[in-house]
Length: 308
Image (cartoon, rainbow, N blue to C red; front, side):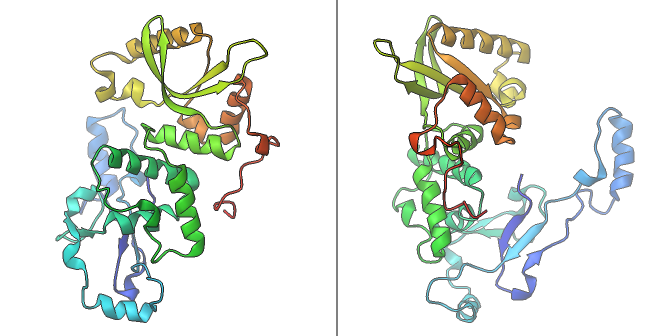
């Protein structure tokens, strides 16, 4: 969940973070809670969660070779607005905004300006999704993303944008897989293959990650399967497909046993483990996943994010 919704403003006096408005309108949050809890006595809802996301207003990006004063003058003419898309206020959920809605920036501008300021693992999650949608035809492929931002990003932010984009992979199927892969990379492990199909005695199974490692002399290669285990698999009605969480959990156990019978090791992790990278690191090491020879000391890789 983002801390703010970021908006552009051409008025320098509006730059900054707005107050968080109440989701209960003119009714006080405490009064609203009294009525809510009377009908839902077992729901633990605090007044703190009944606040909209605040908005953070920033000025437009500054193209190379242009001064801020020159850009403000150009913006007063509303140049380029006709090419942007109007998004209704309701599209942003609980965020308070203008009744006439927001104008959405083109992805070629918004994405590099946003992603280059994110943590590496979050940047990878966004770009994996971008490449996946692009490959499926949901985004235009007329321009090369590697060149996006070159007219306004600083040298440092350009390095971050390009490093994340080169690392991104549209084969990732969830943010959890993307964040996992970024952490695996940062912790110096050899890269896994993604979405590998494995023949088992229960049929073909597809796994999130697989490492294929050389076997001992005269022996077959060793294979290690990595699986990101999100809560949605067991609690999201759209993913349960009519089954109960217990039925899904049992089917997952049978699937894992079938994978192990192929001679593979299986290591699993979830969101809680990703919040503490050392936990994921220890699990991968115990499973036998090696670090790359250049990072055998176990220190995180150097990257454009190293100054954070």
